[in-house]
Image (cartoon, rainbow, N blue to C red; front, side, top):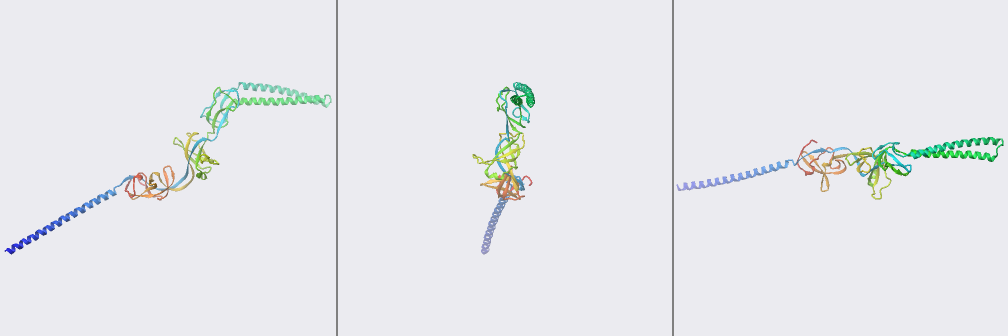
Length: 377
């Protein structure tokens, strides 16, 4: 009996030990499963955070198209030719001034008038003097002819004949002198009316009503035919690329543009600036004015290029990059920039035509960022 009781107690202790071991094992397994689940949830959360778009962007395709080679220049807009209208008579007062600054004038148009009363009197006196001398000349010719007739019959001495011929010649000379004086008086009368020597636009006026001018006094200054030119300054390195006839675009202060073409280059560079002067004939543009200092471009050639918007180019650590889109992730690619024109830039290397690049938002992205595309490419 005692032996049986001892055996029962021993079995009970074994059973309790086994239960303890099983309980410990269950607790350990539960802890391991809980830890694994926590790690799995954390990994899932990290993965979800990684795949969440960093930014909403716009994209475009790199394109291959013709792009002009441009030379940037700046310079002053000036009159192609500026002409003066001067007084050609002296001591006369201006009685009318018929043109003002900014007026468009035409060749032969009356710009001003001088008081011509005294000049008309001179013309009348010259005409009367000429008539008198012509009458005297006719009388001298008649006497000469009579003397020649008498000389053939040896009735008139040679001395008398010589005097008659001389008087006739002097009368002819006096008539010629009177004609020249009349011509000068009439020319002076013509000069009392000031006319435009060519078409153009009045750029300055110094004539004033009542002014008594001397011969040679400037009355008006005008831009011949209204033509303007741009005197563009370029570096010596660009001189060889510029030839007459090249197209030019000029940016005016009001935001508008003027076009033109190269007429000629100065034969030498400036001793002060070491820049070359290019003379550009500008097409008529109402807002262009002589004296403006403007910038522009000279188009030297056109060639195909791979281009992207300038906004898509990111400068980092002194190098240029674009963000290339692959799927919904971006890859940062180093590129070499060539020419720039307006909002476009030429890519010499780094991407190819047809590649999708990020435009808006490119500056805020890093390599391998996930993005959401707002527009189609």
